Image 1 (cartoon, rainbow, N blue to C red):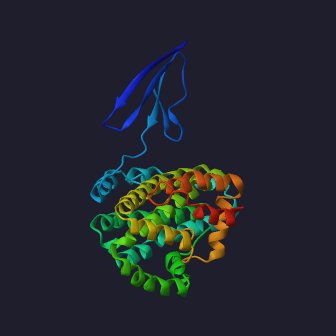
Image 2: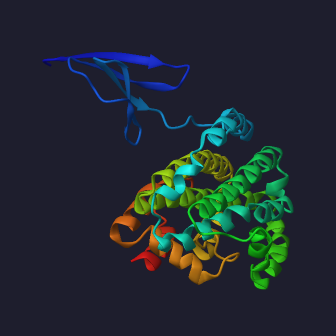
Image 3: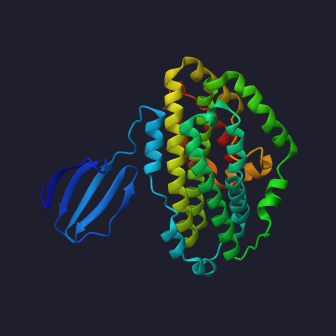
Length: 326
């Protein structure tokens, strides 16, 4: 192989496995080149292409929690100190994306509502899940605050009482049902936890992919920087939900059947209920528009969900997105 030197590498401490390729010419700065692939430039004449192991398989809820707590926050004090808010107004933001950002901001801020709902169930009382939710709720609320600041910096001022106003606009029907649902789900006890976790995983994955679609469509470099940081945290959240769901579904045939029934019959896109259906549909249609958007949703969310025990072949989630986005 003229001009190349192949060398196996195995860094078990970082869980990165792959090959090193030595090239005889200068290469660009290191960057991601695709799912599971990362290029690292070690010298001006050397790059290493890594096949990245996505996440290890956890055997217990305690393992999942330990993994989660080991993940550093993308939005840390250094990120907040150095974020270029002064650059936001220098780049045009299509006004058509403002309702999408408002929707995302509000849904992020409503996490405390979902948190309180789960705490009234056996799911939320599970020690590992409860500990996760305590941090998860804080992080999601911070995402909302950052999105709100971006809106203001971009020239779309919001009310000083935006959070109270957003909560006040939640339909009474949702508030009423939010009190009733735990009474129903609690009848199934711990067997409903699988359904809770699958639902959460789908919504976290949808949020993550929604942010990716938004920064690509908006073409605003500072918004992209912000959304990339938020997306990294959403990726950690989604993996926690997915991993806990897998554990619960593996243990019980009844849990698998119940979770599949619930998702198949009742799943709705993230935010629907707390936000009007027409706003949810507008957000989905904007972010996952057309065959390419639906294909991306299926590839990144539908197929990932189908890897869960009991969910092979389930197309309902992607079909509901397609009905809105096509």
